[in-house]
Length: 196
Length: 196
DNA sequence: CTATTTTTAGCACAATTGTACTAAAAAGGG
DNA sequence: CCCTTTTTAGTACAATTGTGCTAAAAATAG
Image (cartoon, helix red, strand yellow):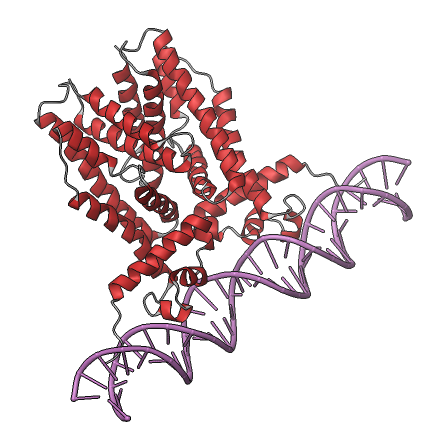
């Protein structure tokens, strides 16, 4: 029997190299040769795991959402319900290096979804998943009778969801102008404003 | 004397062709050859106006902010102060084809600012200009005594600014999921929530 | 018409691109 | 040790890239 390589781990390793190249030089410069070099592989070897560049990009984008989901799922939330909600939603803000990297890569791929149907479907899926989380937070606020009673549930969901992604966007594009702390403060401020 | 060409108009024409290619095929596919073809020029002729691709991209990105600024400046705002504010801020939402195109192009270039210092400085400038508009709106709400009196001005600015860009982002990336009307409704809802 | 200068067209070239293909290397079961 | 299959490395190639360069075309003033 031949040499055995854990394909999944290898693909993750290559995808992480892809992230690195994208962050350092941008998606346009993320050629298979640069990615292979970053991953410490030959181009031929890399093609054994991703036969086309499209496959590699699709996998690399999906890895972002997988990572975010896994972290959110495994994390233990404590404190008051409101604090727990803040922590849940903070998973979607680039408040540390790990999340910043993921979201920067996600943003770059999101821009590419505008002209790439394959990536677009993943984007849409994640959009709905994330919206579901936001919806759940709003619903919980109401159910726990923390929320003011004159809220429009649908509009609150759109508002909170847009606020989060807007904060994330600003923080990623202009970190010098909007610190991580400020994004979290703004998020907390907003949640407070929804409560009695 | 030779043939005279209005350089400014020509550059705008070429930049608009650049927009078109970017929207149809993405920034990575926006080669000088494709742009020249879209503009109805030869590559050599185009290089007479933009000697490098970087110049062309920088100009094309700046044209977006110029267009938005010009439109905002020339527009006549009427109705109540609150209605006027809604209209001002709606300039930053992709609520019609013209604005959608501009913002889609802006988003693509914004992603590129992450690895391109030249574009980044323009992005930062526009960030501050836009933040200034939002700040002015918040201040006006307070000055006109429309606002609730327990608002934190700084946090309200961050919140409103992030909300606008988040709505714009969602609407650009996932127009099927978030209609233009819904973005405007959400914006109005938010402004209402700031008032007594 | 001529002269002058701008504008345009297009070739050339080196670099880079994605990927197809071949063959060597590696490694574990027998 | 040897066989089998996976894994890797590297070459090759056509296509595309940005840009340098040259010369023709266009158009206006005289």
